[in-house]
Image (cartoon, rainbow, N blue to C red; front, side, top):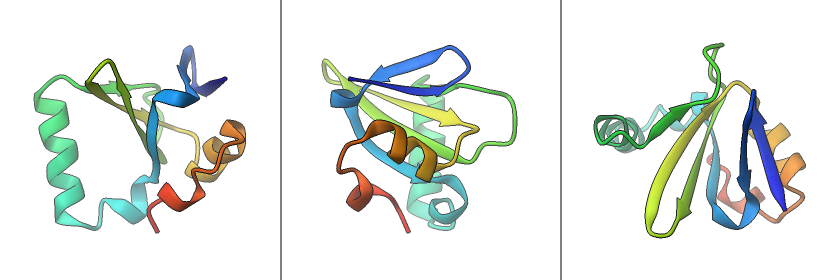
Amino acid sequence: MYLHLGQDTVVTVETVIGIFDIDECTVSKKTRDYLTAAEKNGNVVNVSYELPKSFVVCEKKGKITVYISQLSSKTLIKRSQAPYKELMCR
């Protein structure tokens, strides 16, 4: 099954590690540090240049990719139709 993250970006649901609300999660310094390190390593993909509302962490063949999306985490969770609600940062 596929998950549309916005614009022309689609990932398989099986690769999704977590779907996070960007406003809620970036309050934590550890999360900000993680996102900064991922960006420095070239592992961040900006799905849209609109105001970001969520980020999705995926792993495929041992490579971690962080997708920044303009869609809300709740919308992405609904689209995934999978039990990722417990992975959403609150």
